[in-house]
Length: 229
Image 1 (cartoon, one colour):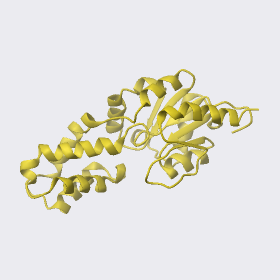
Image 2 (tube, helix red, strand yellow):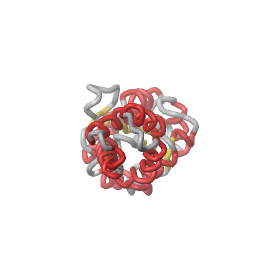
Image 3 (cartoon, helix red, strand yellow):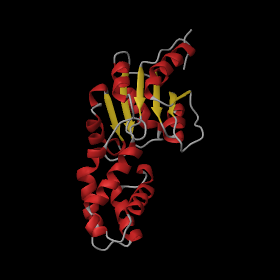
């Protein structure tokens, strides 16, 4: 970032950054097992939940394929993958929760910065996640990979966001959890990268890191001071 340049824009990842995806999906899969318990006789609930979470691989596999593999892996014959997938489509949002202090932090940052989201995923599910969390009003632009025809870590999706928001990459910080998609990629696109730490990765190539959302405003101020004249 050039000396004296302020951070005008903050872009966010969604899953495992704003949305507590791990807690949400654990709650959903346990509830799904309970709804289909009679048809899942012989499959222990902890095995069903473990298989779903593992196959989902934190969103790296589309859910229709997750359920096709789940049916085969667990030897389920009294349900189809389509039934489980439809239940997922209908009910997963009932279990969505954000990380603590997300709404309060976004509300404060939106008073002084332009905010946006860049997320990989299917448009329907990601839009519903954002609405369910009640955070949509804070964002001036929301870019979802399926709709945009671009996916992180492609730098083009980061440049598209800054173009839409009327800022330069040098005036932008990106906040996310993934070392490649959310840290290395925005830095390659000319942005600052702020890592929301997690247990999956020992470290990430970033300009700053934090654990809890109420720390983020201070982190942004420190980055601005660090790059001031």
